[in-house]
Image 1 (cartoon, rainbow, N blue to C red):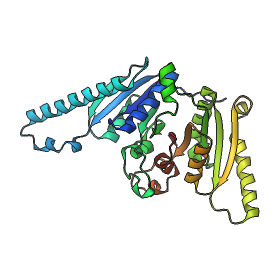
Image 2: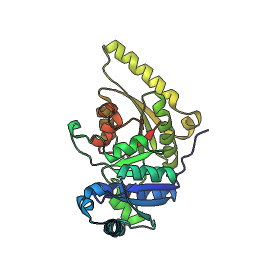
Image 3: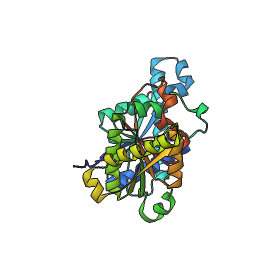
Image 4: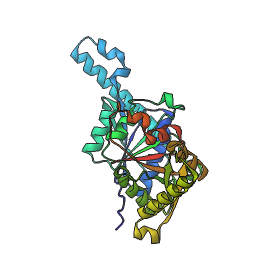
Length: 299
């Protein structure tokens, strides 16, 4: 039987950047579609306030921290008021701490179903943010992380007619045939059923040696993709397969643009930020270099 994706609690960390606006719009859309609770979280990080280390006494230090917290709460209230135009009323949460740790702690303790975060979308692989908050959360979160650098492409029109609901019409799942991607496939299939969307299962071959072997490898990959489709999904869902040749992240981004994909779903290994996997991570490159939101599901 196909698993149904239930979303009851959504966590959306906000740092007041333009990327937070994009993430918040996606979070509102998901919350409204699933009728889920949305928590807007802002973390006051003391390293951004070097004056904190020069406060004369413990009492004054506590007053200083409280002032930072109150300032953050006021900013968060203004942010939500400026960017919420529907019936969703998010819960506001302001904490003092380390951003990634605070996000992960809340998600773990409150059993969040999905974390929606903005990515800063920097161009050029040499500028990828090693140790970034999004990267740390993505690799350690107990739930999937939806990373977005742009707002839903029909959010303006949708906002005028029916709040922030953004209908997913085309979903792309990237298969590497590893155990790492099995859980991500379940989420992709569930979302496809939930939104009555079209799902494309994609596998990318890197560096086939000859034409004959390439054709053989593509045929084998296509057969393996076909076997990933659950029997009930084959009858009731709109699912197709695609095999491409080239750099995996580049082919994913290219297909997403060509097919106007609304959501890319990928598996991600739970490795540390200093691991070489950061530089070899297809998921990380698609998140940073692509324009489509990515649902990263940790194995």
